[in-house]
Figure 1 (cartoon, helix red, strand yellow):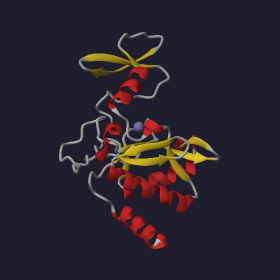
Figure 2 (tube, rainbow, N blue to C red):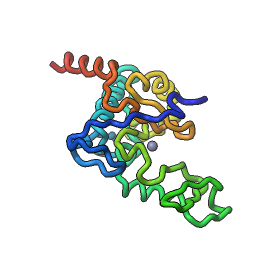
Figure 3 (spheres, rainbow, N blue to C red):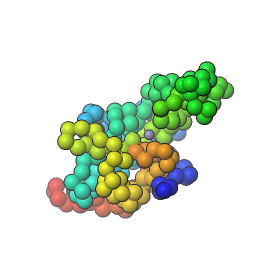
Figure 4 (cartoon, helix red, strand yellow):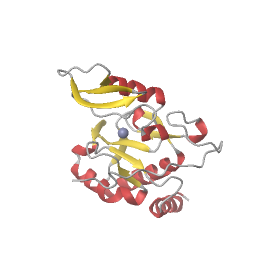
Length: 202
Ligand SMILES: [Zn+2]
């Protein structure tokens, strides 16, 4: 199975309060909106992604009675420092065949070998989490954060519905990782959900 969007790149949001291009992992408070992530606390996302994520969460409740969340606090916007910590926990510069895979990434001209038993991580400064447009999606179920990939009903719903909110997948190896593809655009689906909420809540 290839998930929708694998092999394509997202449009980055260009509209910032400062008018300057977004710097990966170094977004200012004006380029981030707080997002409540059940089980973890308050993370943040780029405002356009936040709108799409909120609408997606509303429809997950409406369609499935399921609460979506992120796998942890750094699974929405992730600062450069957080990405660096994650990267260093999964990759090392000295190749050891017992503990490393042969796959490596190049960071600042140096090869970093992935440790066995870890998921891949982007080189610091290159993750879509650093633009606040990616969410490692999970399900908040009976007071626990549960992998979205383990919930086939939810995951199949996400596969069908995510695109209409502007989300798609980056890698087949990361079913939990969705990113907002449409930059400053707000999809009709998101507008419809917002209009419905405004009507219901007066
Ligand atoms: Zn991710």
